[in-house]
Image: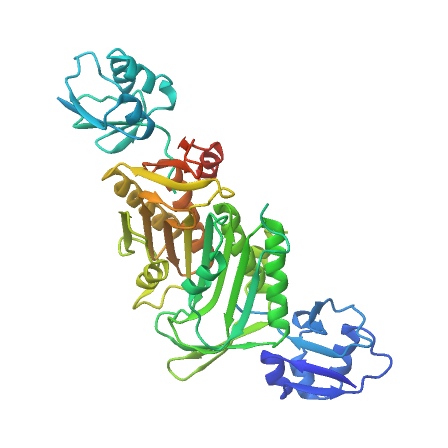
Length: 84
Length: 84
Length: 157
Length: 157
């Protein structure tokens, strides 16, 4: 099981802040993860529609989409940040 | 009579903070003033030795050495500023 | 010289307001090698009276870690004597404080650059998101990230 | 928009210490168009324990006028919402405040640039002079103007 966490409009569109998911063995990168999640339902498809703007963090560190996610404890998906 | 005011090491070397002086008619610019003052005594010659570093203000506004000083109420001579 | 591991980094994410003066004083307390302290306070604008509140969401844990990482890079890069960064979360009213960054250094340009650098990186890489609430009851939605903020960060690269 | 004649300029030259937080608060009090406030505080360094005090001399009247002129240029140039500048004179102990500049603006880069601009000009054109007193009783003499300060100012030209 991998813990997924969502923030801002990604969270709102998916309809939850976090969940534990069993990832198929062929989901190896951030890009794979986005495609897999989009197949799970309309709410995911809507939240992750524009893949390029979605930011990914593994174990609370920013990563590129092509980064390996295998073995991650916590993966976060969120929009570009707007703090400060 | 013209009021002259001095600051920092110019003041210390001349030995006073201000004085009223009758300027000869041929003292028309800042450069003329520096040369005239240097003729008044060793303390002035020492204070104004390096003419180029001396800053001049007329009626409390910075001016270049070649500026006309005729009619000035108050002329200030001082070293480069080191505030802040 | 300045900087290095001994320069303190203080990072907090909190709902409560902060006291900018107290944070700046804490940074220079008991030391006389700091010649310059630059404090940045970001406030909630009312957008000409239209905005009733900003709501700030963050990623707990990562937000603090990311700001801390940025502060330590700033200390190294500008030989700062210390940095304090505090970011508020939750609902924030127009005119109220959102974020504080204080940088101390021996000289002024390092302190200015340090505080400015931390803000430019914080804006684009610390996990916070702003939602607008409008005075007329409309939900203004999530604030879009600005390209100008990305460019401001790239300036330091 | 921001800036213009309505943006307040406060300038003071005084022997007493100042309260940076109170000055920053005053600048944004009752308004919600300021999104950024940058405060610069210049302090007296002890130069590794050698310095016992700085003595600051100024040209009364011209000092205030010159700082005011610089602040008004900054307001115009960076569309600031207000600037406060306070410079202390007389004997100042290591660790104590010397100068405060606070700049308020809608956005952060204007506030950073405004405060930094005022400091760079103040350093080289406001009539103040520093004399050093050393801990061992030596009179350190008048501080020399720095070329780096002239260059910092030229950067804005």
